Structures are given as C-alpha cells and as structure tokens.
Image (cartoon, rainbow, N blue to C red; front, top):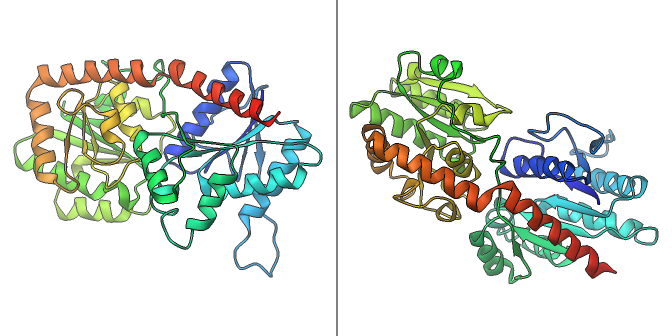
Length: 376
C-alpha cells in the first residue's frame, strides 16, 4: 500500500505513534509518505519506503495567521495524486481530518482517497468538547472513512461527547527491541554520579501533564530520606515554572533538565521509577514505554492509564494532585528492591504481551484493508 500519514511534528504522543507507525509499516513493505510542516518527531531517517513532503506556508499580507489547514489540504491532494496514495491516515481530528476530507473531495473526480482518523485524546477531550469546535469535530468524524481511538476510555469519551460510536480501538504500541532495561550505562553514571536512584518524567511539559507535581513529589521524597535525582525529559510551556519551583524548593541541583530526546529509551532504561502525575491521559504512552524498560510507574488514576498500568502489580496509582501519596509510593518502590524489580519485570511482560508492535501493527493493516474494501 501507499499510505499518507499526517501528524503534529511536535514532541507528543500522537507524533511519536505516527512516526513509529510509519517506520513499522515501511519495514513490512509498505510505502509511507509523511505530510507535515516539518519532519515528525522520532523520524530520524528517510529511505526508499519512507518519504517526507513538507507543507509550505504561503506569505500573503492579507492573512494575520497563515492558513495551515488549507496549505495542508492542498499538499495532501497533490501528494495523493502524484504518489498514487491508497489512503490518508491522519492523527488528530482538528485540523488534520478536515484538511484530509477537503483534499479527498477536491480530487475525487480523478482519484478517491479514503481518510482514516486516529483520535489521540485532547482532540476529543479538550478541543472537541469546546462547544465552538464540537460541530466541526463531529463532522470530521462522520466524514472520515474510518476512525480509530488509542484506548477504550477515549472511545467512550467520543461516544459521550459526539454521539458517534463507529470507532475501532487500536492502542498505542512499543517496539520491544527498542525499549529495554540498561544494566550498566555511562548515561546512568552521568545522571546519578553518586549512585542515587533516578526518577524520570517524560512529557511535552504542558499543564495537563502536571510536571510541577513531579518536582513536588521529588522534594517530598528527599524530605523523607530518599536518595534520588529527578530527570525531566522534554520541553514545553511549563518548563520555566518547573525550573522555578525546583529552585524555590531547594532541589534544583538534584534535577536534570535534558530537553527533548529522540531516544527516550536511553533515559528510561537507566531509571528506577517513572512519574506520570497527569491530569488527563487518554492512553499513557509514557507509562507503556517505561514499563517496557522494566521501570515501575507512579501515576494518576485517570483516563486510559488504568488500561496500561496494573495498580499494585506494574505501578502504583493515586488521585490527581495527591503528591503526598505519590511520594510515599516512590519511597515504597525505592526501599523495597524486590518489589521494584518484580513490578518492573511484570510491567515488561504486560507491555510486550499487550502492546508489542508485532501485535498492534497488523491491526492497523487489517483496518486499512477493511476501509479500502468498503470504498469499492
């Protein structure tokens, strides 16, 4: 198949999943064409089966803000015709679905291109639920030729918000060979030169991820006698606030801000506990990646996280904002090596058995084939 994929190229779950989906499809013999404003995150190399088509913005003084959705639709239509695409797979309903639908309609006399929309979370739970966006988001879902969601939670939220239930659940995935525990790595000694335990947080530093809570949790762990360092992987709008909070709590010297990283597994593989205190997670890809590296997760009990973490078995969950309990949970894991290792081993087993790319990618291929058969 010739498949067009559009994602937000920024650091976040949907960009990660879209990038790795394309790579996995290419490895299985499909041709993948990424259509985006810049090279998607984690798409580190192009080859004969992975191509990138940049959406260029026109400069015109009439527009205060350049119309990316229209430029994207135009590029989608152009690539669909020139590369003879079989389908467009877009991640996020707004604006990607609308752009893809417009592209499909603009060339339908020459070539019919079905549109598949994958919902990742905030396109439904935040943006889509805003009353001003609700009609256009519902239209995007209704006009897509196929819709998938990354969790059962997100499917239910879609049904409740939009009264739309034609949604196939295909969860996020990991390539098990890329996510492993690293027993001895120079990076571990660099991050914890005195043998401290490593707590890690991976996100795009948006408020919904509650990165400030990570600093609060870490400070309480130190106050209660824990010997640890905190590694913050990523960047985003909350970075300055997190940095300032670490300073005011007098823990800044024990916090490492390493920015965006293409190889997240290197940092997860040397960590002891992962922190995911999010206000909302439609799936919890960071938790899945941590568990694949045998790292237990201390997380909020929200959204799709309970589908990824087995509480008391692969991680420990709390109410949103309960940094006191979360710090106690971290200490439980750090002070009980047998439990921490058992959690890690079980987390790896569940990650591979439920969410391995070998299990999930065929589900996408089967869904593609079903949609293509329906159009004929």
